[in-house]
Length: 170
Image 1 (cartoon, rainbow, N blue to C red):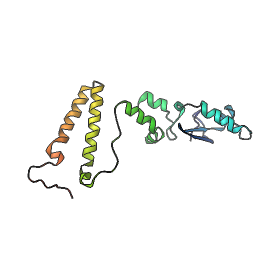
Image 2: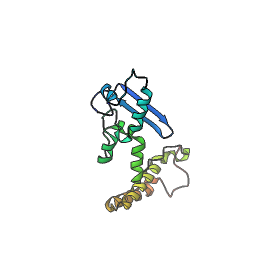
Image 3: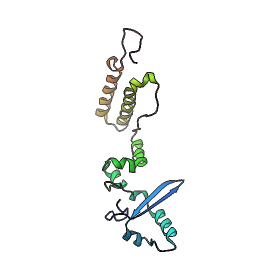
Image 4: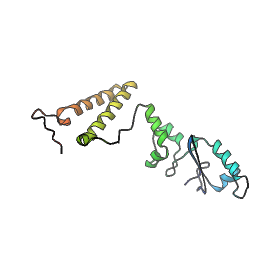
């Protein structure tokens, strides 16, 4: 892992604090640890580490794979690699939530509806995108989403037929 302070050297000290507010992690190289006043032989190491954690903001958090920071992701609105989604999970979800984009439902569903699962989740996702496009006054996108929803609701896609009331699944 890369040092969270200098972002150049390999981290050799890993500090993790768990609290009611969440988990804070800091990865430091030897030089940055010394600069922060952390000396492994010191009797006051716990005090030094606590001061470091309290002074370290979430903006300095970086992805362990690509080294991209949360600040970079917020500025560019792009993650650097797939691991960024795991490293900044709550922050990315908050950013998407502010744009009106919710994650699709992934819970259980009755067996009778299992065949339609992707259709239902796609429909919900498209409706959310439609609302967000209208809120942002992106009318071309909104029209595209509206047309796609009409396609999803057509009898050919939903499996509705006029022949019998019998379901065609199972």
